Image (tube, rainbow, N blue to C red; front, side, top):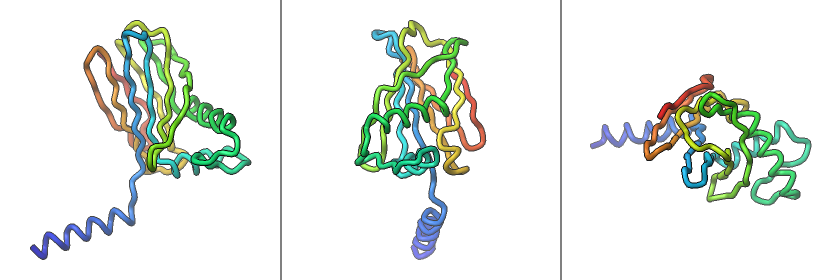
Length: 162
């Protein structure tokens, strides 16, 4: 009993000293809308500190001074750090918006006019410019089939076939 308590406390202590950095990217092919829907979940402080590297104004996602500017900054960052090829063709990611949920920011985007999703090639280095401990977890769904993969720094590419 004491041994398991010591192990648990040791693990908790290590977790505090070595936090984890992760984002989750959900990619869903919506056949009715003929679009690929993308949602990205990032911890708010991680995104703020990363965007701050590219801005001369203070980044405050919860209380932005200029929401239009903030949306432009998030859109530019996502488009720079997340590139997709769908069925062998480069795709343009259209930023829709973002919302705060507790400690995270959800970023929404889509790629219209995609009748079928047979293959998606991903090149992603989201938040690699923030921490080299970053992991990006992908959940991709097409035709009722969901596949997942985790990209750990410095790996940037993966593919899914359906």
